[in-house]
Length: 412
Ligand SMILES: Cc1cc2nc3c(=O)[nH]c(=O)nc-3n(C[C@H](O)[C@H](O)[C@H](O)COP(=O)(O)OP(=O)(O)OC[C@H]3O[C@@H](n4cnc5c(N)ncnc54)[C@H](O)[C@@H]3O)c2cc1C
Image (cartoon, rainbow, N blue to C red; front, side):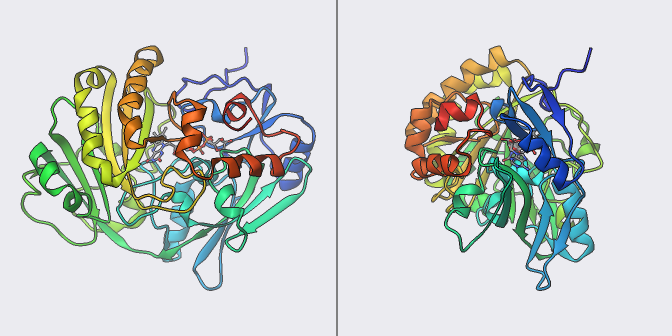
């Protein structure tokens, strides 16, 4: 029996006829030309059916790796299959950096960008905001190149895989920098009410972790250049390394305790050397205007006992506003409420629906790559450029080669 093709978490069994792994652009072009239905699979870290197809799934993992740094050292051009961990190592060796990273370096750049994946930091846009150029192989075999002078770029970047195969991306880069990572424990709820903006702005990247067993915050992870001493708004410095989920091995986590280190060894929470083949978890995340942060935390706190029954850990992050059409951070500085659930879809979905109901009046937008049940009509209302994106999909892919039921339900 051939092994069932699933996403990383194993909660989605793909309906694809086969997985195709081209080793060159010519092979890729032939693979797209040879089928009427196709989707690209990145590293498979999404938790819903957006990458699925009943045609062919194409992985770009076996394409030759491309890392071309521009002569002015302001951008890098990469292939559509590279993962952040590989790219980060290459950039660091050249004295360059990305402005931010997600919690895990194992995800593919094209897949992360396609869903508006983000790290944290009040001044940091999501990872898609670094994209200054895209090369997209379309169903007719042509390649469209977009840069920031083209108004379609802002629509195509968070593209959900619906426009074509992203064969290359150009990303903004910055000079390499160092950060220190600190973990504090037991931040009192009162500190959130009195100092939330100061807390969220206290580092280059700040994450709050809680299991919602109380309204206090279990852990604060601060990534910043400057050293820190003493308590943090009533929270105590951890007396050793911590994992966001208590009891899980801390050896998988990036170095804490304030030792300075390169950006790519501090911005992700997890080390590249630790390779999680699959995860016993589901994830959901909602993005809200930062101005509604306390109301949003209050709304979750109101469902605390229900949430805690299916929760492994909740992470609170911030993301700066951008102009990308389908970015969950479109035109608003955002607070992200992330939930790592237990691996039990049946038990998790009713809680997801309750959270959606509680957060909808505050303007919640779900993470495109995670578990959500929001109706297409609500998503359309949440995104001012939604109809423009629908037009873009029809223009780029008039034959519907890159569509699937998930895309049709939203943009059909
Ligand atoms: C353990 C874990 C940690 C995570 N941490 C974070 C986090 O810190 N922040 C956050 O925001 N999210 C996070 N996520 C979510 C994750 O970043 C997104 O699901 C992201 O899309 C995963 O990238 P991928 O390469 O696995 O994409 P996939 O799930 O494989 O695909 C996602 C979409 O991208 C499309 N796609 C992929 N490659 C291409 C291409 N070359 N051309 C066209 N379309 C393409 C696919 O068709 C699909 O529509 C996490 C997920 C996991 C499992």
